[in-house]
Length: 509
Ligand code: ACM
Image 1 (tube, rainbow, N blue to C red):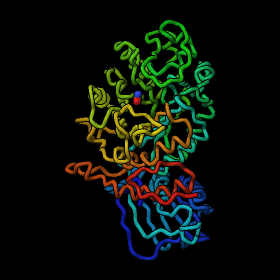
Image 2: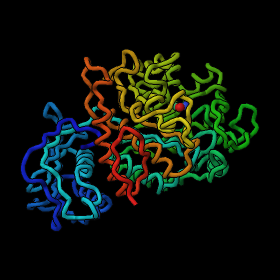
Image 3: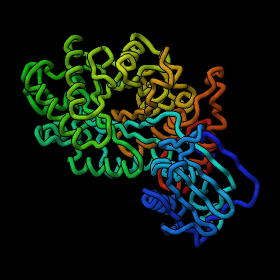
Image 4: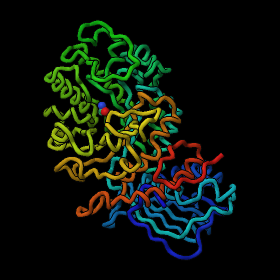
């Protein structure tokens, strides 16, 4: 009953494991201590238990976390960077992995197998797990969630709460959309007005805000402890009104734009080809690259409807080279694939539909031809700001129809762009744009449970080539597993939408 569905689950008969009052977490191997501590913290939240972490061999009834070569479950017997094996027996639980990342994902699986909040009325004796052996590793290296902190700002504490929610689903990248027309959210020492002016408001005149560089580093570190890589996005040359409001010199006519709190797109552009704009790009990329231990830096490049086509191509090629010179791999939305001179290996993020329209597939293929790979975020499946149902008060409807749990679940990344299979797909990402989403509770209700579907699409094994994707993805079976997740969401105060198709537990409280 785990989401994402593991590669192999072998239940066995026999007495279940009981998480008894003297249970400990026994850790062995490099990095196991930190993973053990995170397991201990999670069990305190999930089921009010306080397990000590000990560097001693496991005794009867303990949970062992072992990190060593050869433990990282791959189908061919080799170590997978994020693979793990979880064995549950009456004597104890053992999580084995070759890396802390693998062990951490094994921890998430164990959390899901344990009943959250005890069985019934906090009955701690009821914390049992049936015997099972799970062997698991991800289909894709990149499973992402994007949070748009530019339209509505979310505090560092709220971003950490979001990270806590995504790791239960083994999502390992947090893409922060840091800049847009409505707000600039990361402090840049060399251009301080970006946050002083550009960070002062947000969509619908909301509170505004920004991360100091220390706050941003702290978010990145919190994520990294949980095996989540932060991908910062500086969207340019369009989606830049907040920057244009902060510095007159960035504007094509040299006049600062007013701050913008509406929801239109495509009206703003940097003054491409200009020496000051070049300096701006070098400065912001350099500072954000220096704050980012992860390999990726996203440059946006979407919906540049006010930039002349040739200027757009010249600008994104130059800016992407600046990213590469700063030691990062550039990422761009698929429109950036109009440019054929991007640095080798530039990653594209595809956001058109599961059936491509216009030239979106052609632009996406540019990245593959350039030696890069693709992140798939088809907007009719993986854009979690789209309403769940007609008439929802929160959410957008520009894709033409609501995105149900089925829509988020029943698609396959390798069947979206003709000719682009798993060898060229880095992974999947669910995106939450926040024009209409103003609080962290609303964020969670838009994201959960649909993120569980996208996470499973990104982690669990590919459907057989011969099998229609509708046959491979059993919504009823998935819904039953999602219902189990809801116990964890209830126990941790995480909000979610009680969509149809899921046999939800009785509401708490
Ligand atoms: C996008 O939705 N404009 C990437």
